[in-house]
Amino acid sequence: MRIAELSRLSGVPVGTIKYYVREGLISPGELTSPNQAQYDDGHLRRLKLVRALVEVGELSIAETRDVLASMDSPGKTLHETLGKAHRAVTPSLPSEVDGESWEIASRQVEELVLRRGWQVEAGTPAWRLLTQVLATIHALGQEDLALLDDYADAAERLAEAEVNCVLQRPDVESMLEGMVIGVVLGDTLLAALRRLAQADVSCRLTSETTKPAGGRVSSVGGGGG
Image (cartoon, rainbow, N blue to C red; front, side, top):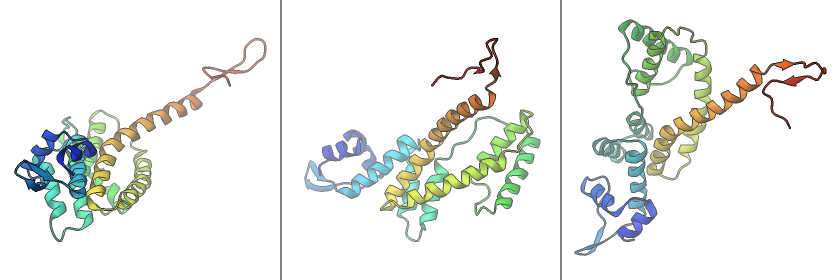
């Protein structure tokens, strides 16, 4: 296919494709004339991955190149390759917390990981993000973390389904693409679903019943049907 067709199928403008080629994110097409090149499905798969990393994951060109280099490195396991991209798209909180709150949160994260038997590396971006969240909670004087294991239970179930889904994809490029999109947009998707569920539960648990003079019981704020 020519670059115009590659652009149409990938959704990436021609000028951006040429820029990605210059930056070494995708390989050049096969020259058929001094001003024409042919591209194949391999270019399309790589371009979709680059788009996911840059546009969805908001990685810099250098970070994207680093993830791609890890994927192309011989001897790298699939777990290591996915982990490289996973760490790259994990955000951090902008807020600063005091040292005492950070130490308390650090112990809680270590105890949580040990208690649940998670095979994860200490100090990764996700580890630090959880520490920062818990430290911020402490710094705000909110000490009740009784739901921490409930969150972990839900996270385990969801992670099992997500990783299994990604591993069903046919090649490493599409696995990485799915993982990046799943992490970044999945966070927002989960937040939206959680808020809808919270609104539903709040409506059900906080509805009060009143008994008007006529003796008919009605639900305050309840909808008809």
